[in-house]
Length: 317
Image 1 (cartoon, rainbow, N blue to C red):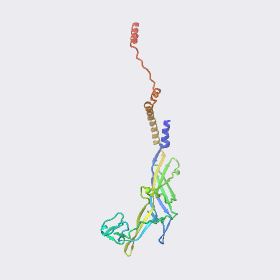
Image 2: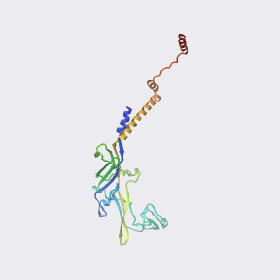
Image 3: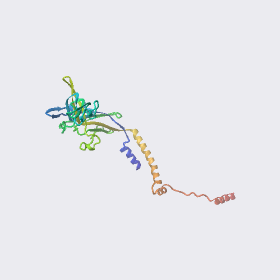
Image 4: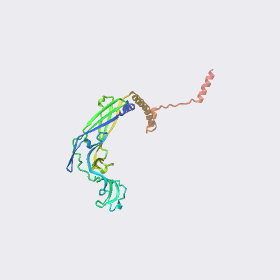
């Protein structure tokens, strides 16, 4: 019975009769759909080149859902935002120093109008204290994400690919799991898609171990009247990370024989271990000893009777 349990464990659960291999994978993504915004009377239509970063479709990319725009910035001197570095005199603003939450290098001047330090930076400085609510690009309901995932198992020479569409943009972690039994028809080798949130629960930001959400900045530079200017965007979005994991199995005589030999060896060791437990650890070990071993008494011959026998034999001769 124990031997049968070992065989079932090795061959059915662990599949010890098969060789295994992991895949070499590639992922290609493509977004489809447009978005529309109307900010302060300015209408704009956003296509894939505007709201996907990077636009070429890597395994990790960002879909923009909201943004803050600061237009017509140029290099110069201007006051910091209220609350960033307040001051009452020039002595509060150390010239040449920087503040981690600031926007540039302080000039040593306190601007009376704003009661903040003057900085050398891209002016006017960005004000990102107010985020548009609701998100500007979440009204678009026709976003579609296409994922093409191709894998190759080098050991078995098998290549498979799959295309999926219709991700609604809520999940930010996509795990593509290729677990294939190549003893069956290769058409059954299909991936499973799982979605996971990687930045905590937006409904409970206080309980999140990391900051909820994702944002970054980028700028569009241009020349105006021989002066370099830029439009600064702070982008909020959903980051999608596509992770591929794989395992393929196929029958192989070498691991089969190895598994059988291991099972036989384990069965032999198990017999010895069971005997040791029954003979020395169980409360009724004496009963088991009596049933396993049979004891016989060895009686020594009586010296006197032996002497008599010898004498009798001599006398007969």
